Image (cartoon, rainbow, N blue to C red; front, side, top):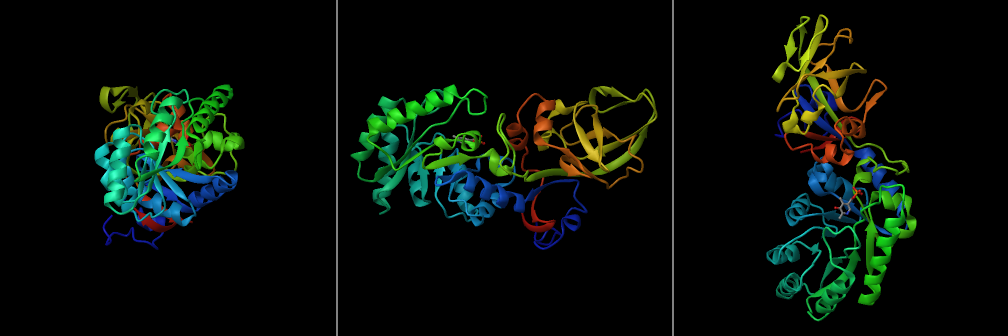
Length: 390
Ligand SMILES: *Cc1c(COP(=O)(O)O)cnc(C)c1O
């Protein structure tokens, strides 16, 4: 946002959003609360906050520095460009790349103190050479164990072979073995237990490592015995929860809001939006919301979603378009242009959660949050006073 806009730090949210069609509010007090709660939940383990996918849609530029200020010790992303974006926010603590990267990424990783997960000899060699050239040797690398999810990572015997190659290189040191759990949010824990055993087997073959990290949010909360030296918490940082996971005191961080852009009458029998898939059965008041699937408001919410207007639930009517959708406000007395409407969040004691939005389109809260793209401005605030925007 331009510095001349009303959205400068210190402004109130209500002033900053006066002339915005739609926006996302990021509650930095809730974020700090969640960092503290997960820090306490994790005991002695290092909390690696996962900030992939633009911090699960919350806005990396706001979330990265706020989490570092809140005491988060390490960060996890999936790809190198995300790690560089995170460094660009000013975050200085360790960052680990959890997904696939290339030997070509080694120099930038070393230059920016970014830890790579290596899965080939060639990649380990590239990191080692870059570290020696930069005078930073040895730099840490991590190796991922495929403990049963069969997506990314190496089998224990392959881990041992790569680890011994790493030890011979001179420019790198093996800091951690880790894995990702396939069934962490299921009621039945037996597969998690099995995956843990595979990791311990890899650790034994390698002859020990300083750090093991296998737990995501669900496992961090449900299984302290799997916290080891590090936990990777994503969704919990944002105050949302995986299935079958109790809430240890996490608070939702994100709200998605808009202003009714127009409120108008629709006569009985008339249809609205593409395909005229909804027709008024009575004399109706319909409101235009300037948010669409291009913002991450899924088209599957056509005739299924709900929003809050004046504290009341109103149904989405007709198709969600790229930039707009419509809601039926016939039962909301006084609904008017400019009214604040809540797509995700709380208003007048009513709440629409990311989980509820997800359920309406048969997906998970992760996808709803991560799908919120960059067109909507993010407003980071504490108690309604603006602190940072992106
Ligand atoms: C996304 C991700 C996480 C975080 O998972 P949550 O369920 O959001 O806590 C941890 N590790 C890896 C490898 C991931 O991709």
